Amino acid sequence: MVITKATTESEASIPPATEVFDTMGAFIQELMDAGVLLAAEGLHPSSRGARIVIDGDRKTVVDGPFAETKELIGGFFLVETKSLEECVEWFKRYPLRPPAGEPSNIEIRPVIGPEDFSETMTDEQRQAVAERDKSSRFT
Picture 1: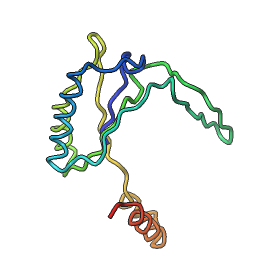
Picture 2: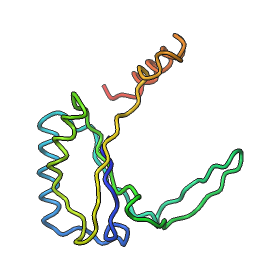
Picture 3: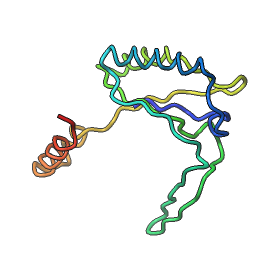
């Protein structure tokens, strides 16, 4: 999963310039043509969201907006590449830039799969996950 960060502009609901749609569209099309893109979505500003803070058994709901824009997720890409290095190479070409004077980053994190828990899952649990995965995919 490639996580893009929110900006002051995205948190203020300022839409991107028209040419940004063309630039991002071309990048997304390249990912699609290469067969690595599984999903890509942007997120509404945190003012339209909520957090659930969990402290032991206590759960507290906090409505947005949230502070620290540099720590907020602005969107994501779900891609399937052969390696972390291949994913890094793709997203070094990510065309969007944060507003002037506002540094940002893109975070790349592998998605956990059942194979990552092979030492602690029982055969029955592995089978249940495999069945759930099969039924949740489009055919």
